[in-house]
Amino acid sequence: MGAMNDLSDPARGKALVLFSGGQDSSVCLAWALDRYAHVETVGFDYGQRHAVELQARQAVRARMIERFPAWAGRLGDDHMLDISSFGAVAESALTADRAIEMQANGLPSTFVPGRNLVFFVYAAALADRRGLKALVGGMCETDFSGYPDCRRETLDAMQAALNLGMAQDFTIETPLMWLTKAETWGLAATLGEKGGDGAALVDLIVAESHTCYAGDREHLHPWGYGCGTCPACELRAKGYEDWIAGGRAAVAIPESVAP
Image (cartoon, rainbow, N blue to C red; front, side, top):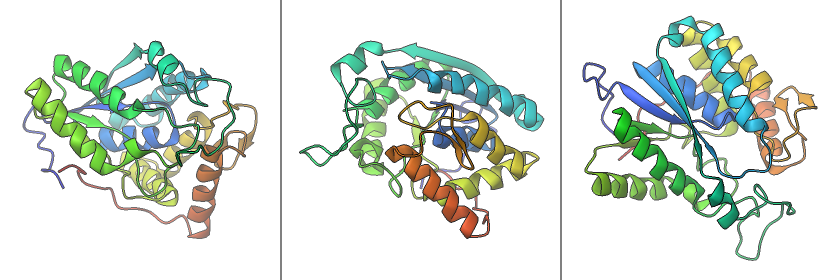
């Protein structure tokens, strides 16, 4: 566990959220807005096949401002970085017309090699220039799709490398790291309640965020838009169903998750 955030330190009161517009990063944005005095967002065009997630980013940000006035004053600039050449190098089912399947190396074809590592290098460079100390990401070990760059061990090493290479003292915050998808829904309800309306944040994530690998924005389910059959949809749907079955249990807001 890292040190508690100290809002009396202007640098420590600022965060940069790696924000894709998906369920997890939307919950992380709410977590950061609850915790930090100033929050900026960064998104990446890495050559992904579906532009809908880039559109979802702006919709989620706009609804956050509308529905949670207590957070509106904390939400700062959004940054969109074009790293589309990376998607061409690290080809996967998310960047090319390929089947979603398990590969011979035991990883799913949706794995984009080194994606989170590249994201954090760009995010840290931006944060260095913006005076932002906390880098917030939605990576999770409990419910994930077999991606080795989602592991906390990987991100601890990345944090050390960034701080050595940039002479900085960044922290990589991963509030969802030890939560199941059901608990992520519960955390959304808890955060929304702190922001003024618990149901509103859950409804916002259902209606505006996008996680489906197929880019489906035509079919609306109780848990959100999606094809309903890709691994991302199946994981999201099961988490929502488990949360409902558990009585919509609230989840305590995680503190810092960093070494």
